[in-house]
Amino acid sequence: MNGVDQARQMVVMAAKDIKAMKSLLSPESADDEIFGFHAQQAVEKTLKAWITVAGGSYGFVHDIHVLLLSLREQGCDIRRFKGLLLLNVYAVRFRYEPLDMPTSTLDRSEMLGKVVELYEHVQLAIDTAAVRPTGL
Image (cartoon, rainbow, N blue to C red):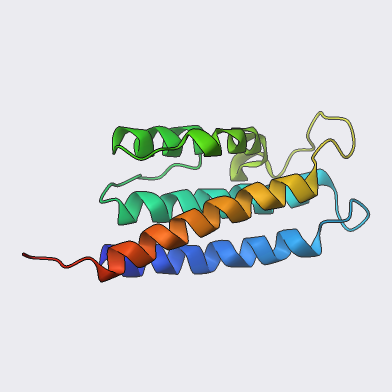
């Protein structure tokens, strides 16, 4: 599987987390840990797709900060996505523990918008890479 195909596969999975986020927009539908987990997963998968299509690698990592640094090292402009770093608290390794945070501190609509903005940015990067001639 080439990098573009692998990146496409990752954004398909990220889209499923975004769909879950949309169904959990109301704080009454689920706790912040559940919404935040899907947001973190969508961002992680989308960043990994971006790294892949940019020609990099990421290893076994769930840390959004590390993934963003990898993109920056590849020359990608990550500045507008730094606000997504707050999702690290919802990473896989913390999903079995309640968060020590006040209830409903996450602005779900705003976070959904930021995640979708990243997703659309990376989707465009994938589409651009798919039409780029190779081997010339």
